[in-house]
Length: 452
Image (tube, rainbow, N blue to C red):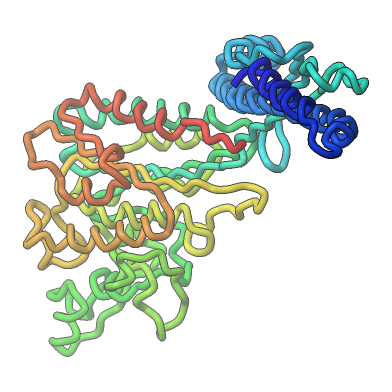
């Protein structure tokens, strides 16, 4: 209802009241008319001012959000903030009652809560009724704040480097794609520590570094049994040697090549911190002298140049054990032994992400009854991996998976299962698509998270 219509109704009611001639109505009317009209008029003026202010709040909120996105994306520079704010606000604010409307935007590049944009606005509404009481206008002001960058990112890049990656140009295409993703994610870091990335190459095993041979989180039981010499050279394993009544002498652990295989079940599906001592050997990682030991992993770092050098050193060899790669990708994002992810700043929220790329189906792991390196038996490895991925997602991590399928394999149901949503699984059928797929993942991770 318009102000004129409201005013006409009030005047009509007052007119009827004024014509009443019973008793002391005229006296009462004389006393009540002024305050009644004043209150009604004030309510109308305040309603108009409040509407103008509410409309301004909505316009400022949208303006602040759009400015934050533009600035984070690099669409505008900090010096353009006020000009762009004016443009956005003018397009959004359509209230016709407001006068002398002004806005101003300020930008703070970095605080403990991230980068901040504050947009302040003010204006006034000319009054129709309150002017008789000496209030010709009602002023109002409001503001909106956008904060971003208080979410830091830690990404584990888990890469299949099995023998089949040598086929169809897959390894050749992987290297520039993975390096471009590192550059893409690294560019999101506005301050030191905003983005950390790890690289975990995997085949049947993962290489954690031969220099760690003195670490207490390694279980040497299987390695000692397979690597040594017998007092009778006819025997090459501990079991055959001791069964023949001979003496087995394990090699020095400094001859280990750095490879580890799956932990005992159910620790193979968790990121439980390993403990030293013989009382809890199942929490430890089993050393193995795998003859196709991949390139050593790189723990979380902000040295993106070294990560790209690591990518360049990848070489395809061995069978496929996705769970071991995923396990160490998860470990790389975990504080505490063995990889000791950097401490987290309590002023920030952390987004932890695993990106798992594999070109084939699982074929082998620590247990020979699960696969022979060519084929998996009864989905045994996949079943362990599903439990593992359930645990990872329950811990709040986001999983992206990619199947590079250039040879017509079936779609990997376990990679689909592990992805944190259908939109986070990618099927690639040509090596030429790997770059595009990694870029799409990087773009997804780059999406702005803004808090009003």
